[in-house]
Length: 407
Image 1 (cartoon, rainbow, N blue to C red):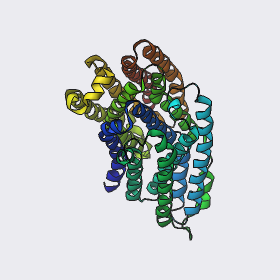
Image 2: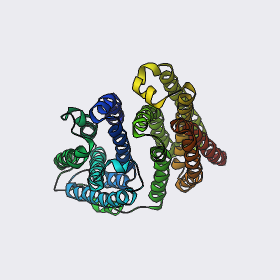
Image 3: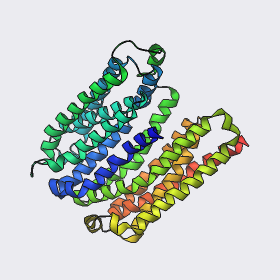
Image 4: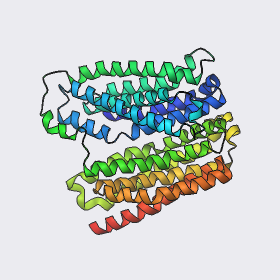
């Protein structure tokens, strides 16, 4: 229970901090710079998700070595991921610099690439803490990281500006946190006298199995589906309205927390050999829990939207009940689809899971591109319902066939 609280807190609190600080951030940075900031915040999340299997490999490596004496191995691995991430991001940002309204807000893409890579490295340290069983240190590391990104701009002198923040403050603060994490990992993992057999785990470090490859490719599809709309939207609406839209999106995505927790429970239950003959029963039970908890959250957010959503969000995005209901409905369907996707993963069907993503994500992004070009923010809101419907149809059909084969 204590472990679940540490992990849950590290997932929930950073997002809540972002939402609570959003009005002050907009005031400190200015409306247009705040829109660019929210897209940078999105880039941080994407960089953390697209780690080329690094998080799973590092977790396996640390746990396999009994969490002792592995500090220098882990430190070298984190350093390599930061360096490779910087090189890839530098190339991407320079290639896209002339064609992106968002990147034009940052005159120095090198600093943006360095900041994003350092953020991903700090996230990786949190995974190493968790793998070593030091969940409380992982929680502290994650909260400090969120504080640097979200709260630091508020306490800086007025008029400091987004560019100086990215070019000077963020790299220095994130590098300091990375060094602080190094001290924490040295204490948690030990620098000598490894226990267990790290050699048996070392092949997982830097290598990628077929299962992990499909898991990574599926993650690419998820990132494209979840965040591609924001880049598409940045070409059609002002950064001021885009920032408000992203804040609202981040709020609604918190509805998925029960689904995320239930997905973990489903994966554990279905991987238990004793439960093999009860797959359908387990899936139906957890789907019912998800429908009740997620549906309750959706209803609460809709009913209390006047309290939850800031006035400036509703004014700048011009929310109507229809579009807001479309976004909430899309999130609810996405929560159900996430459990169906987890069922495929638990059955070892990562290839099928990736194939489904590869089929529906291009359709979703094509629909969003048309909707956004025609109706702007309102079209993007409608795209959430399109996405959720496609996910439930595709994953529902695949899950039904697999459940029937077990009977």
